[in-house]
Image: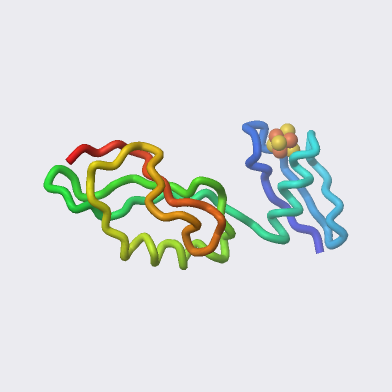
Length: 115
Ligand code: SF4
């Protein structure tokens, strides 16, 4: 069975088709082949979200994973984020949780917050 998808590796956005033998068509470069194969074998996504803060200035801190994590683990990681509460000061890029959910990715702050 063939599967269609849009390559999101660069802004060109090639329309890819991949078959059961992992033959890819529609790509303008090799990165599209790697993307299509990963998308059908182990799809990953960057996770961006917010977590609660112990602070009277603002209630939420924006965070992201340091690299894409498996789609299958997104809900597990969101559960960790829902239970997380952080205390300023926090700098942009600070690692809040190493290897979150055993994904090999760290949870990092995308904002600086003073006390
Ligand atoms: S296949 Fe290559 S050129 Fe096309 S969107 Fe993907 S990375 Fe960009």
